[in-house]
Amino acid sequence: MSERAAPFYCPYCGEEHLRPHEEDGTWACGDCLRVFRLRFLGVGDARAAGRRTHEETFR
Ligand SMILES: [Zn+2]
Image (tube, rainbow, N blue to C red; front, side, top):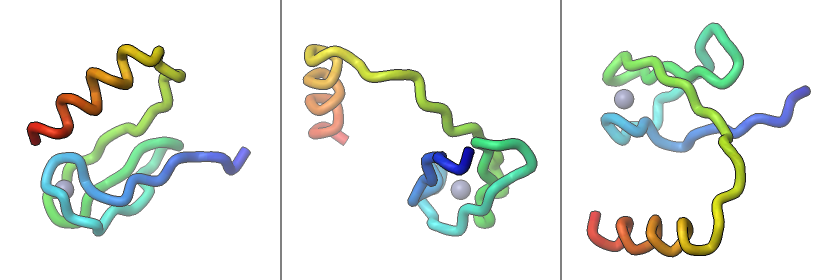
């Protein structure tokens, strides 16, 4: 199974130097050295998507 989501930016420092870590779905940032897991949880409902969009406009 090669279907996996690749992050474009580190969620902690925003840099792009990510590389796969040991386990599937885990990534290591080459800049801040954080290791994190990226996991698909499912598809949210429309109201949840609306809330998320709303929050992102204030970032
Ligand atoms: Zn980082």
